[in-house]
Image 1 (tube, helix red, strand yellow):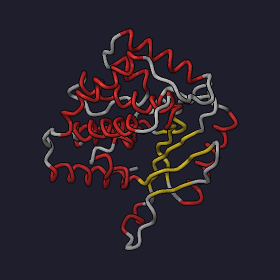
Image 2: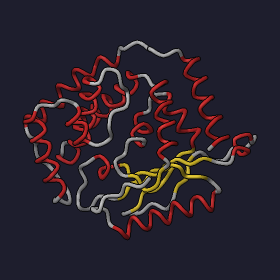
Image 3: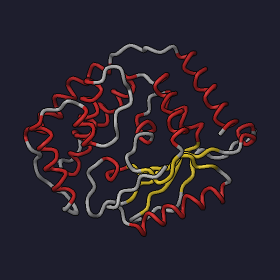
Image 4: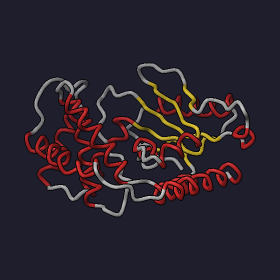
Length: 263
């Protein structure tokens, strides 16, 4: 599976492909999933946005039985253009069952460099069976609140707007804990008022042609939308645990053992 939009620089994409191939060869791992994260996948890139490739890797089964396990993160050189690194499947599974929204988002990125859909679907099925909605909701609530508390800028506002849209999506999808990754889809699927969506679209368009959005106030309608979603999202702070921890751990172990045996 590959889903790389034409808007991405072909030379940069080729270098990402090269790095992924090198990681597999040098570290002896399989990479069943590699996607773009960051502002490009979130739906609001700037002209100078870097590339944030994230990948999941699986080691040979015997290496998971070692008394001296290898690192669960693989990194490639970081520079102004490239931020390419990945997580071991074991690390990813542990984070997913804890409700880590970052790991969950990687499974729903709209930009895929290389991927096995069956692998992604199995991991999403595990998430569906184990993730606490409240954990995901708390993640977006607290991330958004931190962004609101920091220095004000239009660029930073996007990092509050997307969590707010994710909270709205969770509100309108009470049976799911896996929101989409990108802001336009969150707004479209979150039954957001048309004037809010239009204001967000205009701000996204402005960011797409501006190298750096500095000081300035966001549209009032978006400011109010963000505050309203954070207020509504406070329910996740006190929501009770719905899943049995023992059952969750058993499901995670069963999935992981099958994946490293059959993958």
